[in-house]
Length: 287
Ligand SMILES: NC(=O)c1ccc[n+]([C@@H]2O[C@H](COP(=O)([O-])OP(=O)(O)OC[C@H]3O[C@@H](n4cnc5c(N)ncnc54)[C@H](O)[C@@H]3O)[C@@H](O)[C@H]2O)c1
Image (cartoon, rainbow, N blue to C red; front, side, top):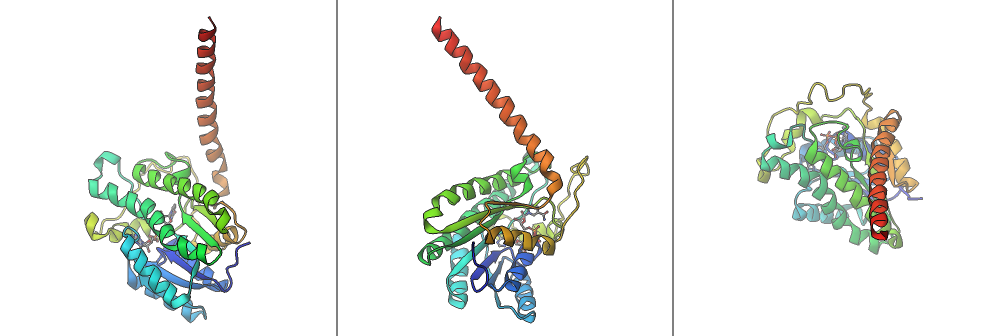
C-alpha cells in the first residue's frame, strides 16, 4: 500500500484537466500538493481552489521539456512541502496531423513534452524518494500509446505515449528494491480543454504559444463509442491504483475488446510466422 494521507505530492500539468482533477483529489485524500504547470496562472487558480476547500497546495511554474525548469520546480516544492514522495508526471500536449504535414518543431515538441517530460520529471524526483525510503510514480500515458492506430494521425504522440509505458514498466523493476511503485494511467477519453488550448502550451523553443485549436479528423472515432469521462470521475480511480500499487490503470471498460484484438493479432501473426521460418530453417539444415 502507498500512503497518500500526509504525503507531499507533485502533479505536472495540474493547471487544468486530468492534472487538476488529480491535484484536487490528492488534497481531499490528505496529501499536500505542488501544482506545477507551464501556465502559472492556471496552476495558481487550482492551488487557490484547493486551499479554499481546506487543503494545502502551492502553485509553481515549470516547463517539463526543460530539465533546469523541473529541477527549479522540485527545489521550490521540496522547500515548501518537504520531500515529495508522490509524483504524477501528467503534463502533455497532443497532435492530430499526418506526420509529414507537421513541422520539425512540432514533432520535437510533441516528443519532448510527452516522453522527455515524464523522463525529466521522474529523474528529478527519484533521488529524493529513494533517500526517503520510497514513494510512488504515476505517469499519464494514453490509449493511443497502448493501441497505436486506434485513433489515426497521432504518430509522434502515440510514439511518445508508448515510450512512457516502456519507461514505467522498466522502472517498476528497477525501483522495486527502493520501495518506489509505478502506475501508468492510460486515459481513453476524458473531457478536458486540451483540444482548444493545446497550441497555447507550446514552449518558445518549439515556436511559442499559438491560438490554433486541434482539429480531430471527422472519421477518427468512426465505429467507436467514446463516452467522455470527467477529471473528477477518474481521479479516485487513479489514486486507488496508486494506493494499491497497481502498474496500470485504464478508465473505459468498453475498450477492452479493441485492446485484446490489437495484441492478439500481433502476437499470433508474428510468432506464427517466426515459428514457421525457424522450422523451415531447421528442416533445411537437417538435409
Ligand atoms: N483528455 C484525454 O482524453 C486524454 C487522453 C489520453 C491521454 N491524455 C493525457 O492526459 C494528460 C493531461 O491532458 P488533459 O487532457 O488533462 O489536457 P489539458 O490540456 O487540460 O491539460 C494539460 C496540462 O498540461 C500543461 N502543460 C502542457 N505543456 C506543458 C509543459 N511543457 N510543462 C508543464 N505543463 C505543461 C498545460 O498547461 C495543461 O494545464 C496529457 O498527458 C494527455 O496527453 C488525455
